Amino acid sequence: MVVDVGGVGYELITPIGAVGRLGGDAAIVTFFVHTHVREDALVLYGFATDADRVAFRALISVSNVGPKTAIAVLSALPGPELARTIANKDIPKLTSISGVGKKTAERLVLELRDKLSLEGAVGTISSPATAPKGSELLIGALVNMGYRQVEAERAVTALGERVGNAPLADLVREALVVLAR
Image (cartoon, rainbow, N blue to C red):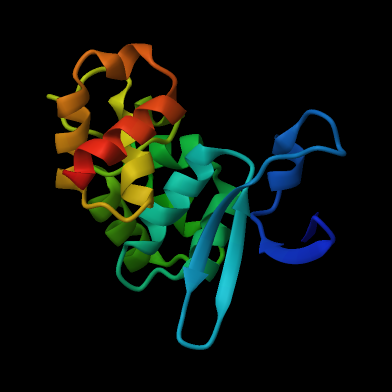
């Protein structure tokens, strides 16, 4: 699909059904985008939900699973359903997806069972048990900005109880100040 942003067209590769899951006003839509950089290309992948983008990133972190296979998986199983399939170790369901053989399905279950949580109905990356409630989004935002998981967790811990009460945008700014120290 091509998305027009201020008169510039950007090609987004999306899972089948992503547009249908967008809902809302057809003139104004929000995609969650993953930018994939290779030596020879810069490719944008668009997702209807952040859960799908998180699932995509988890999928491409598995060895021998590239963006093409990850898109095929998410076309068949949106993020929350993928999290349930992984948690249930449903190898036959995974192998029914084009491009996913038995070995790949087993690798997905083995490597993703701890990365996709079953709150995973929202498909979030699981966070440490010691993290304050509501910190998953903040940690994810900081990691997506390039900080290491440990650094993001340190910043969230430094913010304390504010994490559960303040708007995410404010928390990101405060966390960046903590990380700059």
